Length: 279
Image (cartoon, rainbow, N blue to C red):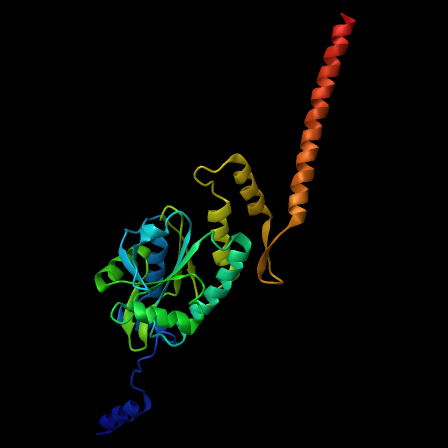
């Protein structure tokens, strides 16, 4: 009887396993049970870089049909959310809105596009996406709020490297915004509901100002290069500004180089004249 009493006592002392959310201290074991592993999800996301997603049909919040190819010609920031999310997705969208405004101030309002894709195909209808936009204060931001059928969502998110699983709290997923270049190729992944401003603006700056555009003249390309090097991040204001000191430094450096070349040419001609006079 004594061994049974000891076992019974231990059973009362040792707690039964408690299932925790993915944000809890035992998140790793829970992820394994539910099939969602953050390391695996991040690897899938990174592996998608330098690939070009297929041209899937989409619907915006006004009911207009479009495709990913409709965004080509300039960079696209594509954020993935689900509208029934009460905390993380709204926070993500509001922070993205703040950073996008800073990017537009630095690079130009029309220099890139922004879209939000609802990946909960069963609920994220065009109407729900429109309601989500109003609720998050982005209805007048000029963004595209996108929906698609379940098959399209599954295929597109796979190509974007976006892994998500249904969970008791809604969905487990990496908070991800995908930066796609003007040719439709995935250029960068940006993670987190609240991220540092340069994480999004720097890749956009590289795409908008650092790459030559089709049929771009020499002067326009030169202006973009100057803007690229002189548009710098100011951590004090958490924004971007045109650093005139860099521009002045470039001019002074160019003047010194040209002056040096002119002096060398003058000396060479002077020596040639002297040799000619001596003959």
